[in-house]
Length: 322
Image (cartoon, rainbow, N blue to C red; front, side):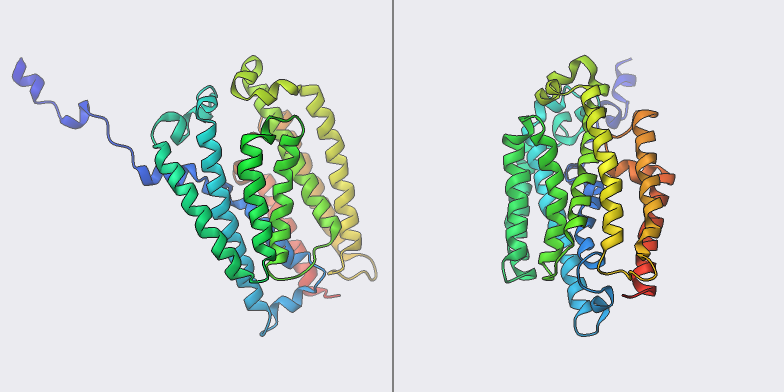
């Protein structure tokens, strides 16, 4: 009997050692890098004409700098995600989904996470200066890291309403950073649209957390005790109407698009309305909204409306130069 027991494969008794590099990459949340695509708004919705970015002497260099800005924001965002997860290890362990994250589950050492976050921040600041020696982009990126990585993580995420507003400001900073790196101006109406869209997603995420955790919401995140579903629904209604109005005005007044015989970007408004209504449907009817970046990749109608919106914008700006 003893011989039979010793003949068992070792792998059956000893669990496989987790891949630290794979877990580290997971903790850096590459799926959420899609949020950093807001930096490209500087090219499509700046006060410069789109065709100027395709100029042989100007365009390629500007495009490369914006791509560099996208990479820089991905590095900074990953560092912030690591810091946030390190601070929230114990709270994440009380969450039905977040308890499976690399740090909360114990699959990744906090020391590795802290060292990686520090390395990313120290590496991204020189990159920001290289992309824009005039310090404009460096100032925006430093503000982003300071506010999102430290003020929010250690303080503002526990202040009611400010937790949502600060996260929304991060999207605006991405757009401003994309403009700063190529020294162009973005229309103020577009910045307002981005702020409202980020608020829309943030409110939906808070609502999802509140309904998912129910009575245990406060144990996971203290700030959730300050919210209620009816309150968030009221905020959602206000922001939804505001997004549609703000985007409509943006389409009417966009300096990059022709205004004769009518503002050509008006044709993109239906895609925006459909995408917003589809997202509301997913929140209220399917209980989604906890991970907006994953939802837009998983829901085909929502993804299709966003893609069609982007293609229509490019078609209008390229085929009908103002």
